Amino acid sequence: MRPIYKIQESGKITKDEIKELLTKYYTKKFGGSVDVERELYEYDIKAVGLCKIYALAGTPPKGYAMYIPEIKFLRLLNPRGKSFKEFEGIIITETK
Image (cartoon, rainbow, N blue to C red; front, side, top):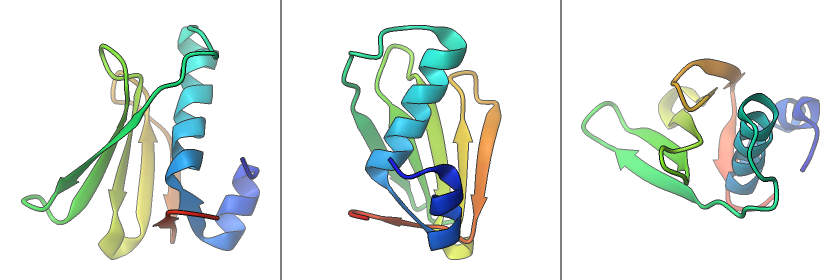
């Protein structure tokens, strides 16, 4: 994964990088196995202003990301819904 400052400079982030940021935060703050491969689920919420929600698999989910494409804003949230990182002017891409 690219360092966060590189992500901010490029203005792009991949879904894999979102997944890695959420996983690193969860294992650092809440413990858990780093070896477990977790899926990143995507929910497209068109009814509330074209927002995309990403959830890191687990019971309950191990972290969330909220993306608003219209204003290019990404917020990462812990499992309890508290924001821990925000990106402005960012675009989510499939590849680097």
